Image (cartoon, rainbow, N blue to C red; front, side, top):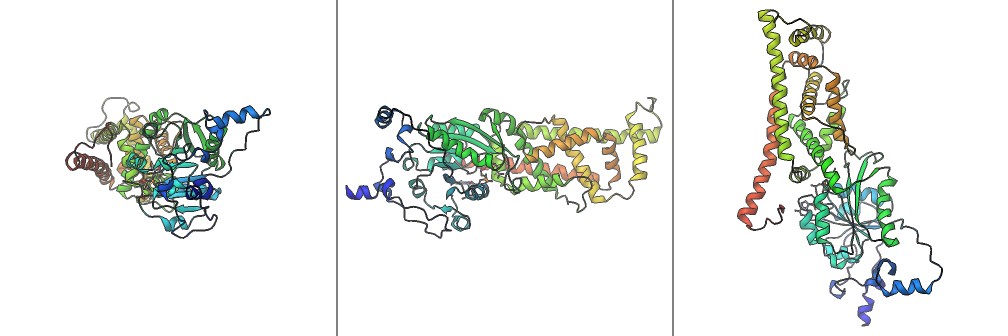
Length: 473
Ligand code: NAP
């Protein structure tokens, strides 16, 4: 009895030596066998968080004056499950705000955790859960999320733990949380709509989308939820309370499109101009932002957006149309030169107007930098494709999507005549169009190749593993 008491998590939990930098092994975990499967109710934030407990009844009966609610916690103990690129990025900000980070991942990131303040890495998720974090933040890839969630020994957590995810798609984590977590656990689904690249100079003004899926009504639970959201408020994020369903309707397509354009452009290996007078630095930022994210993330956006295959087809079709428009116009100009006027009035004949523009363009632009005009031409081509797709502004745009919208805007202010003029002016413009074709095909093949691979593995290596229509990794 005595030994059981001595090892009780409330009485004998080793305190973490923060803010010291820790070297592994960080601390001796409690024996998991001595802990009850459902941790003791006295570990919970307060008796009032247990709506039916006798403790809460007797407290409210014996005190005539109600106690003022305790202030919300200023620091939290946050477990980050999935300590890759994004998990580490979040941990830096959390720890700078004084929160304690308990990290766990498939890979051993002990040394990275040691380099951060208030951060400790747990190789064993049982040890992490026995440290009773206030918040468990799921930060794994979209494709591994369900498997990772199933592997967390939630029976070792406090019964009222808050679960949060940061996956770039939202309905999927919401449904696996509701399906897998006991009803006592609180749930917030979030999407910080920025990453290590786009948020490297701070989070001020960047969108943070969240849905409070399930928060118990006790004061402690409400204030813990607020304390967590406050982390992002304090950094200046634009806080957007939005349902997961609405998020996916608005953002799934725009995110997948942004990443596709970034990856296709990266495949083309365009060179940025040191002296970028045309303002295409954002285009190169888009390439950097999307390609510094893992292919896994991109693939997750592909898998969990039901319109992604259709969108890929539409991009192809839009590109074919742009090329057709271009060739039709070039042929029109040539025919005019060969056969004279078409009989249509000069002003109504687009080929005549375009030819006149070409002449003045060629006089003015003789010494344009070849690389810069190439980038301009590719940017206009992408803008033409996006305009044909009917891109629309959304209330939750990432910086990348804003760049795409800007390209479409440029198209509407710059005439098609300029596009033709650039096409004619640049020696290798046909080559650039071919490169764009090849890059699009390469990205599409990579996506479908991966899809084929996963399905084959599931069908032939582990038949019967596909359940609920979900693809498991
Ligand atoms: P990611 O490639 O989507 O995820 C990498 C993380 O998933 C790593 O922690 C990795 O663990 C883990 N992981 C991958 N496959 C796994 C498996 N089979 N089993 C167990 N763990 C696995 O890249 P990320 O950028 O770090 O993104 C993490 C999450 O944040 C994603 O859900 C993403 O949608 C979301 N998010 C990312 C951004 C961004 O800009 N990067 C922005 C908002 C939201 P190991 O490293 O230990 O292998």
